Length: 116
Image (cartoon, rainbow, N blue to C red; front, side, top):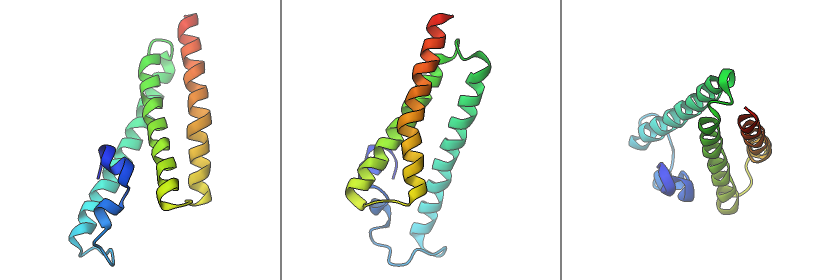
């Protein structure tokens, strides 16, 4: 489900033949695996961002890379809105933060790095 196919097609690629998703379904195990994998990526992003903080000027490139990954994910949310419809309000709030706060942090970190 991952990569560009998952980004463009969404979960329908995985779940298109599933009428009821339950723990006995062969598809459930794939869905559960993918969900946990993506949760692990979010955890790794958080650890990576917190790792950059003590030496933000030295680690600005890594911070920028992580931020770009988050922005790509948020662009995937836009594709989802266009293809599948409006998500919950909380998802829209996170998307707003991903598309405003994250680029502002990238700008600030790169400004700090250039000043060092």
